[in-house]
Length: 501
Image 1 (tube, rainbow, N blue to C red):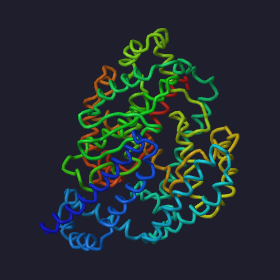
Image 2 (cartoon, rainbow, N blue to C red):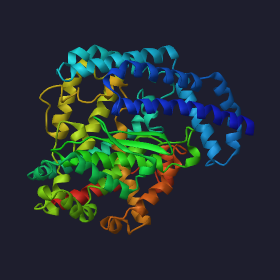
Image 3 (cartoon, rainbow, N blue to C red):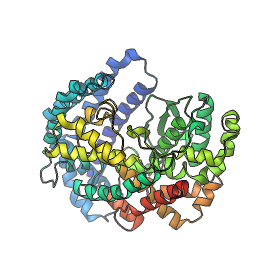
C-alpha cells in the first residue's frame, strides 16, 4: 500500500505541476504578455491542459485509486492520506464521467459564445448571443446528466464549485436571506443616500498602491511568497505554497476601487498562503470550495476593512497619504461613504447590503432555465422584472441587464453564482466564532493588530486546504450546519447604527 500511495502522489504531483505551469502562462497573459502573443499563448495553454487532462483521466490512475480506497477506509477519517485518496477519487470521477467528445464540444462552444458576448454586450445586442446561450443551456443539461441520481438538474453543476451543496438547500437558505434583506434595503433606502463624493477625487496611482500594500502586509499577506501587479480585472493565482500572487486595478478618480480590490484579493491569497505546506503539489492544496474561498476575501474586505474599528487606526494614516483629499473629511463622513447603500444595476458595483440580492436573482434564473420554466428568449424580461421587484430598479437595456455578467456566456448555466453569497454568509459566521474564542479581536483591529484573527483563520480554515468538504469544515469550525443568523445580525447591527434604524 505504501508503494501504491507513493505512486499516486507522484502521478498527482505531475498533474499539479502541469496545471501550475498553465497558471503561470495565464497570469502572464493577464498582466504582461504583449497582445501579439495571444495566438501562441492559447496554443501553449491548450497543450498543457490536454496533457493534464490525459493524466487525470488515465485508467491506470483510476485503478490505483480504487486499490487504495480500502486503505483510506482503514485510516482515521481526518488522516491526510485518507483525505488525499478521497479527493483524488472525487476529482477523477468528475472528469471521467463526462465523455471527452462532450468536453471538446463544450470548450469549443464556450469560446465561441464568449467571443460573441464580447461584441453583444457593448452593442446591447442580446439577440446576437441568444442562440449560443440556448446551446449553452443544452450543454449544461447534458453535462449535468452525466451525473445521474441528482435531486435537481442544477445539483451536479453546483457541486462542481461548492461540493456538498444542493439546489434545494440553497433555495431554502436564500429564501430566508431574502426575507431579511428586502425589508432592510427598503428601510435604509427610505433615508437619503450617504455622500460618497470624498472618494471621487484625484488619487495618484503610486500612492494608492503603496497604501494598499502597507495595509495588506499588516493583515498578513506575505510578500516573500507573493506579489501584486495590475490587471484589468483583479484576481488571485497560486502556483504553489511559495508563490501566491494577486493583482489589482487602479482608478485615479476612485479611492475605493483599488483599495478594496487589493484587500479582497489578499484575503483569497492569505487562504492559499496559509495552507498546510505538506499539501503542496497535491489536490489537497487550495481552497475547499468557491463559497469558503469567497468567505475569506469578503471577511477581510468587508467585515474588517469596512469596519469603523479598522479605520479608527488607518484613517489618520490615509489622511497623511492624501492630505489634500481627506484632510478636512471627518472619519464619520468617510466611514459612511465606504458603506453607502443604494440599489444599483451592476452586481460588481453593489454595496454590502444589496449585493446578495443580485446573486440570488441570478441563482433563481439559472434554476428556472435548467428546469425549462424559463426560456432563454424570455430571459431579459424575467431579469428586469426581478430587479424591479427585489431592488426597485429596472435596467434601461440588456447591456446592464442580463448581458452584464460573463459567467453564462463563458461557462455553464448553473452553479455559477451561489458561491458569492455563501462567501458573504460564511465571512460573518467565521468572524463571529473567531471573536467568541478571542474576544479581544475587535479592539486589536482598532489598534492595527491582526495577528490573532489571521492566526485563528489559519488554524481553523487555511491550513486544511481541501482536506475537508465545505459542509464538514463549517461543522468543525462552528459545531453546526451553515447558519445565516450571524450574517443577518452583523448587517443589522452595522447598518442599523449607520442609518439609525
